[in-house]
Image (cartoon, rainbow, N blue to C red; front, top):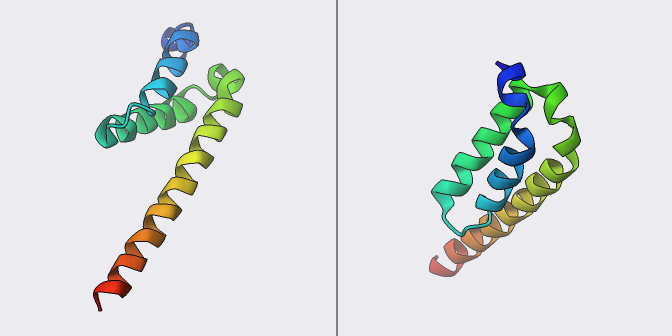
Amino acid sequence: ASERIGKFLGQLVPLLIQNTKSGDDNLRDDCLQAIETLVIRCPREVTPFLKSISDLCLEYMKLENVLEEQGSDMEEEEE
């Protein structure tokens, strides 16, 4: 399968990355899952995109931490 989709990663990966920034949480999650699948299934073909993918993952890991902190702060205020 990686041979068939690998030749389209130059178009596909930037589109997936772009759509993670759309503001739609469901679309972002779906795009991140698709990227994860590409990394697992097409490791050699996805190598040129790993820097962009890593940066994207770090960005959303930081966002998740901020959201978790805000959520715990709100819970403390409610108590």
